Amino acid sequence: MNFRNIKEVDEYYKYPMSYRIGSIYDDKGVIRSYSNGKKSDYKRGKFFYYELKNDFVKQKFKMNINNKKKLRLIVKTENGIIDKGLYNVRGFYKNYVRLQKWFLLYYFITLLLYYLKLIFIYLIFY
Image 1 (cartoon, rainbow, N blue to C red):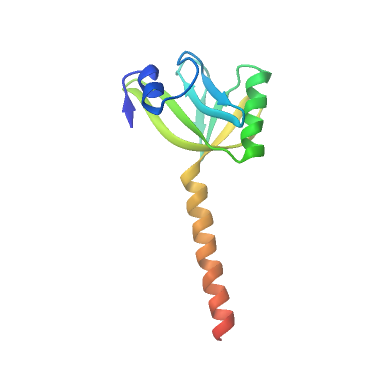
Image 2: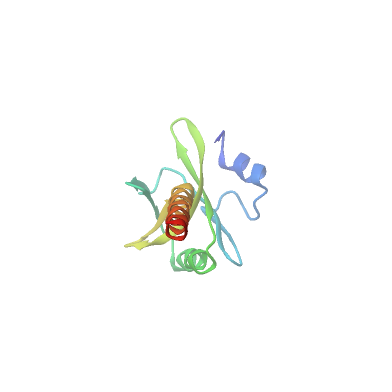
């Protein structure tokens, strides 16, 4: 989904706190992170690397791991603001948090469960 600016995103999702903050959080971790294109955030392979502002924000991302909570990634591009969807926190690298697109993980788990079910059926009936 595309937006004109980050304020419009935060109003659409009804996020708490100021739209001027890069990462919005609650008591379970980060809710939304905004990459404004001015920092050294980057995508490599299946991961998005979001530069950490300080240790306080890093602790909030760690809470996402502990609580198994997804966050929404918003990225500013030349064409406007893009909602990249839900991401899981997969760890840290240097001064970055490593984010992975949620649907890839969901797809993998769904596929794995499907094949386990087939194996189970095969073992029972053959």
